[in-house]
Length: 191
Image (cartoon, rainbow, N blue to C red):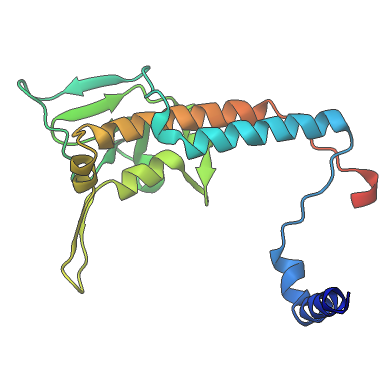
């Protein structure tokens, strides 16, 4: 009994000591007004969790058109993906987010703009893939970070392209789930 008492005293001391941090860092998930809303949010959370954890098992988006610039066996190696530029515009406005120049062989067209709506840290998931799936060299150490090495490990030379197409699917499905959520009504005790 004394051990249990000491345990709770130590927890209370710890909570007092770090109360300010705990108030900022612990998630504060409000209660929703009705049980039905809770079930809808719980179901959406499960679906989103499965979709995002198992993103590599998702079917690649089939609504795009792949155009090949050269004849023969295409190369799926990627150096740096980039969005097609719109002439006469600058910055982010100059990026045509419906067309991706994958490499000198392949252009991906008819990318749905709705896929850009799913964002992570103010950047769409597709933009993250375009930015990170590349070959880069660290200036200080000279270490080469080649995304194609992971494709070789996976024994799938199309991996970077398939990843991009899968992220389109994940983005579209995520937005469908989020848009189907009921209006958030906070329980009166949490207001």
